[in-house]
Picture (tube, one colour):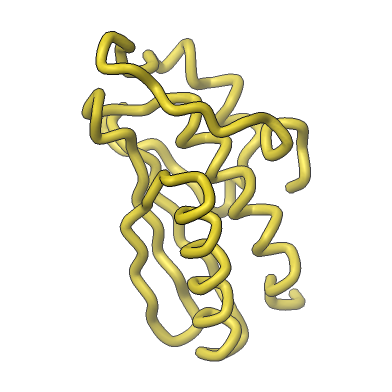
Length: 118
């Protein structure tokens, strides 16, 4: 997935912003890899990325960690053999913000390098 969402700026919200509603985030969700990402309870994004081995999963984890530091937007990351789980939401508003979807799209783009061949 290398859609335009991944190219948009990852702009932080303010404490006055409200979490996105389902209607508001539907367009952003449509740009994410639907085999990987789900919205859970309208509150957060959850992903399960697959890999051929532990090394690729580890390298992907490192790359999304670097992305998180660059953008100062940090997901919860769960590393296992052949899989990386990601949970993400904007803590300041306790829900989803456009920045969460921008980060997810960028993670999808990074994963393209590592995706197992089918």
